[in-house]
Length: 324
Ligand SMILES: Cc1cc2nc3c(=O)[nH]c(=O)nc-3n(C[C@H](O)[C@H](O)[C@H](O)COP(=O)(O)OP(=O)(O)OC[C@H]3O[C@@H](n4cnc5c(N)ncnc54)[C@H](O)[C@@H]3O)c2cc1C
Image 1 (tube, rainbow, N blue to C red):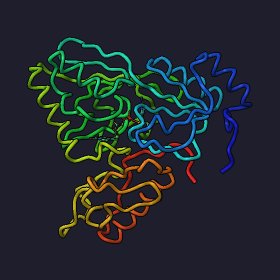
Image 2: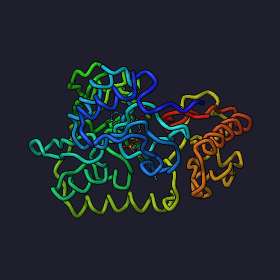
Image 3: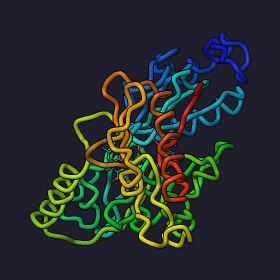
């Protein structure tokens, strides 16, 4: 891979790109920013350009300016479900963190795309609004949770989504109902359309804060018991296989973690990347992993599970940027 100066390729002359980005975002936009520290895996290269923002209007402006410059645009939130390539990310990366939360009546909570799920849970519990408490401890933002339809213990976040504000790749703003979001297991429409999440409305009900706090603590306790939270990771690497899958007969494990465990992969290592001994579907970094180590280990797990069980695992985490 050849390293290119920030702004290229596809973005015209680097000085024109710099000029235009600074014109729109001022000094908030920075060049050649390492992304590893902005992801939970803590691996990967640098963004050509980085804008950190909590303002949905900045996402819209980013779509419009990168479209005009023909510059690649990547949007991420908590960086808790991505693996950034060691070669970095070309074009503009917008990291969306924080934002506004508000109640609309007693049955709807609206949160900007950069609001953390944990912040939203705390906000709702304090106001006696029930429905979000089981998401306590899920890393990442509202935007990331909607992109992947975050799931926990049989629940899917999309089931609570009443409406979403999106910006499409032309820079137009849309309001889309939950039923138009095409939520499925680990799926939403934005994975196919390339739209970005500006905000979302969640359905909530009245609840007793003490009971909601207890439910949140239960979720946090479950995570502490079952996940390697002290080590860097991006959560589950693979999706669970579809239960309709014909290959899942005759005692073949039904979850990705159990398939990986059954293939004897727990503790398996490539460079600084290791299959967690606590949860088979987590790959963790020992602090020295590169994204190439992680990706090689992912491929090794995939082929070992095919060999042992005939099941082809697909990634839940998202690859961003340049690998290899
Ligand atoms: C310890 C640990 C535990 C986890 N537990 C769970 C769990 O229980 N359930 C679960 O589902 N996941 C879990 N995850 C994975 C992760 O937390 C979720 O997938 C989370 O929803 C990702 O949100 P994020 O903001 O970090 O997204 P990012 O990692 O920043 O991005 C992920 C994807 O979403 C896209 N995206 C982000 N923001 C936007 C936006 N505003 N508009 C459009 N697209 C956007 C990005 O482009 C990228 O493709 C866990 C991860 C870790 C590290």
